[in-house]
Image (cartoon, rainbow, N blue to C red; front, side, top):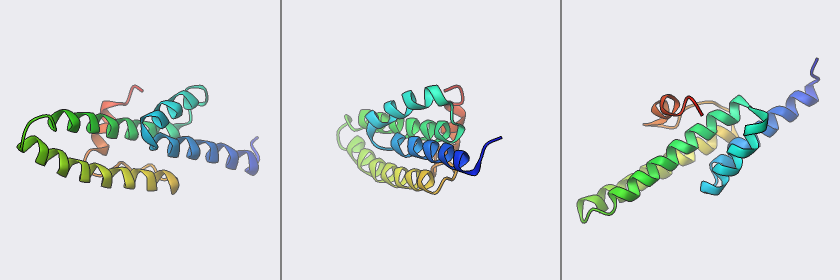
Length: 114
């Protein structure tokens, strides 16, 4: 039987991994490797959300190559992506499994096997 201290330590470790997942692409990779051994569901959820945000950023970068219209979409998309990233990070800090706005539910579907 787990004690309260052990349960708190497990939740804290999953929370730390979830927060690390939102800190750059390298943080996402580190979080993925750290969670690969532990298989914490909370951390895995936020790793999937962060992976979706990274994939969206790559797509925006590719769109940004297109002159004028692509640049406009890229700038607006980056602002929306920044908002989504802040919400995801706040959810990790507050130990909530809420999807990021706009695409979070799609990220859950797309990355369910990760």
